[in-house]
Amino acid sequence: MKLSEIFTDTFKALRHELGHDRPRDNRPMWQQRQSSDSDFCRALVANGYMTEAQMQHAAERYRLGRSRDGGVIFWQIDTTDCIFDGKIMYYRADCHRDHHRHPQWVSNCMKRYYLKDYKDGKVEEDKALIASIPSYHCLFGTHLLGSEKRIVKSEKLAIAVVEAEKTAVIMSEHFPQYLWLAAGGLFELTADKLFPLRQHRIILFPDTDPDLKAYTRWYDIAREARRLYGCAISVSPLLEQRATPEQKQRKIDLVDYLFETP
Image 1 (cartoon, rainbow, N blue to C red):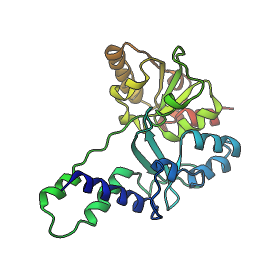
Image 2: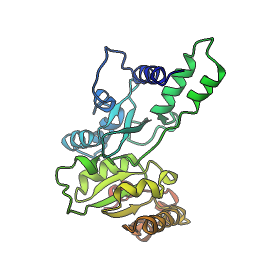
Image 3: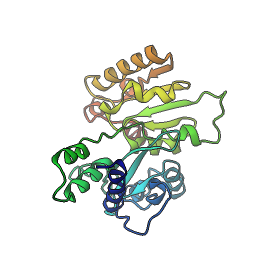
């Protein structure tokens, strides 16, 4: 199979999975699917996490998208505007994750569609090749390093990295002095994903838990990044010092702490 055929079917699949079967649009996929009308965005405002203006501002900055069934798309885009992947997630009306609907990677949607639509007569080796196409991830919000007008070469930003994309979006409007990025989960953070941030001051904010497992894991990653890149990086002890035992049992994050603290 020619590489051009793979890419042709791949983009056809992406348009289908995201409900974008209109005539060809040459804009980047995140622009085609950019929307503040997802269930997630509406829940942010309805539950008091943001005002309507704050939500619109955050949705535009983070280039939030919407799937055809109302899910929010957290695009992972690097500083050169290259789309690494997109995570489709579903939220209830209370702005908490809908655990009955599992998150999906856009890259996996593309593969599933391609393999489902695979025509008879193709050799099995080609089918296996498409199934093994890797997807590469970066930190959610990485594109802001290259697009923020306030960034100049001589300026070192204070970059805050959290676990959840939701946390980064909300915190960005309440504490704009930081540039908020998200790993997408406790186990999604790796030292290599911190490489684009190496010239700036980095503060990691893992969720809390009763056994310090999240804090310890991210502390080890920070130490590795410091060794590899010589960057200024630390792990915030805020939640470990201030969260109650009950909150640690629930494994709260910064947003939970912010809105639960009187």
